[in-house]
Length: 196
Image (cartoon, rainbow, N blue to C red; front, top):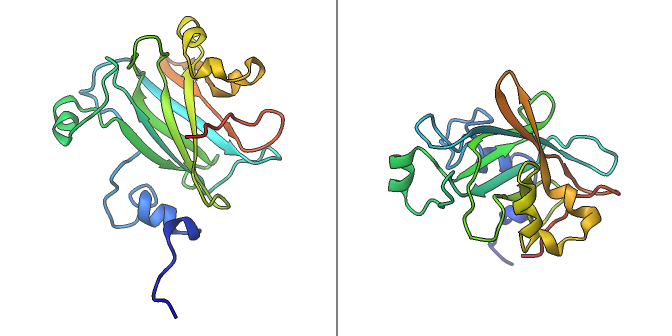
């Protein structure tokens, strides 16, 4: 007989909300990461990243968890807590889809700069949800960075007819820049997931 308990990858239900994004779901615990990457002090173009995680039938999934990591507007990644305090840029966010009326993730950040010469500006994404025993990895590129996207070595490894599944659409509403990026789990338009 074993005293081992379930690991996080074996649990579903409240674990994501309670353990990973408690503030968003109104639990009385502090979240390590929130849906806000950049405070008002952070340098760069303010953007909002908005999307849904969609099942094979195109229905939004209400218990997905999105985690992102990105460089700041100057292409630098956060290395220490002091960096976050000094710049107002956390470099990472975590957002569940269960508190939004449309089951969206909404992340407030700045548009990332180029972190490595020859690569395009991007946001790295980790997706966790019910039914996935292991998380998935993908990337978000920006449609208004066509020249950089055309040279990005990872994006160029993706078949040309599937690259659009990694590119966020730019929308401007009332002067506010939003990039729309839906993650499709199955079907003809399934998002490209990376084998890392």
